[in-house]
Amino acid sequence: MKTQMTILLCLLTSIIFSQEKNEDFLIEKGLWSIEGEFSINSINSDYPNDIGNIAREDFNFNIAPKVGYIISDNLILGLGIGYSYLKTEFENENSNDLNINDSKTNSIEFFPYIKKFFPVSKKLALHLQGETRFTFRKNTFINYYNDERVNNSELLFIGIRPGISYNMSKNILLQANVGSLGYQHASSEVDDVETEKSNSFGFNFNTSNLTFGLTILL
Image (cartoon, rainbow, N blue to C red; front, side):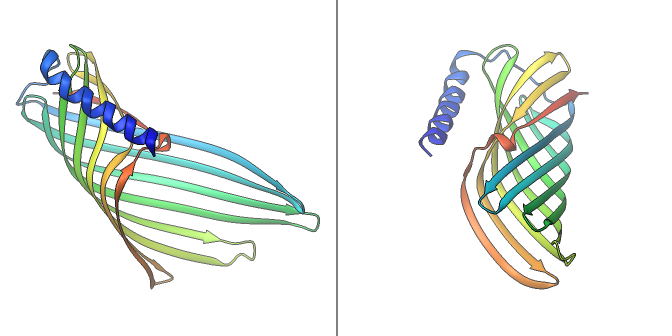
């Protein structure tokens, strides 16, 4: 937790001082932006125990195109859509047999956003993206008895996402985003029966949330 707060403090301090030192980084008012974020992760884990071995395989894919308009210098207002796929497989191997559990999750999301750039140098800027994100998620779980359960959930996120932008050329930016700070409401149903509702607020800084993207200015 201390590490997360230190990183957040450094980010905010850099933003404040960047306003005083350098205003060279500029995205001019009146342009359109086309953005795309992409991430892919694959993790394999083994957990040996006294009666056998548990193996876990995770694969995650995420893509989120966005279109925006520069309403003021270094300020973008836009709309994004996203799709993500997550597959998790557990193999529980013991002396008698092999048990396999399989989980697949598909998510679709929509998010209006506003993004502000804070210049650090002529080619580098920090940015904060404020957004309201609606997510619709379907999870299908199959256990080793071949029983299937379906979990449908809806999520609402209101908050900000920090990141950094590098000006590769006059009309192309390379961007990286990680973590979020905000409020989230979630509700879920299992086999059409409501099972859970939750509300949370907090700062989530996790390298698994790291995404890279390109922005094209037109």
